[in-house]
Image (cartoon, rainbow, N blue to C red):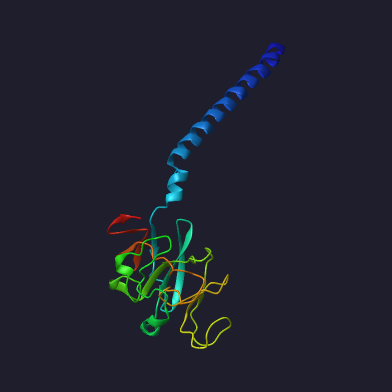
Length: 204
């Protein structure tokens, strides 16, 4: 009986050590497996295309999704919002979107609505001001408001230095921002779902 008592702690110690070692190896192996399934930092920086459901965006409202670490606005414009765009061409710094900030403007967005023909009412833009990289705020209400003209037709304003954009995200003349907000490549997967960062030409 006394011999068993003397040997038992040794066995127990050996068992604990073996289990601990096995656990460490197991954790290391699991960690290695998990890391192989995670995207690399380079892949994260490049940014993969992002799908977005637009079925829940009511006319006159907007949702924001993230792509490449930036906010992308998806605005469903009302008929009244759409009608205001053509009246503002003369006040825009670049009404035809000939210039761009960081992303080449897709050919399908070089029009008065800056949107694809199949859903002209849906605007998809990167919500980053081309002046100093701030994120503008939405001001969809019309009429006189602080920091806005009395005949304001709705749009966006950058709170940093006062650049204003219409409901197609085109910058008004004589503002600090030199270009319109960028339109990212995007395409429709269905009437209610889009993918941002990819179009018929492939990934951006």
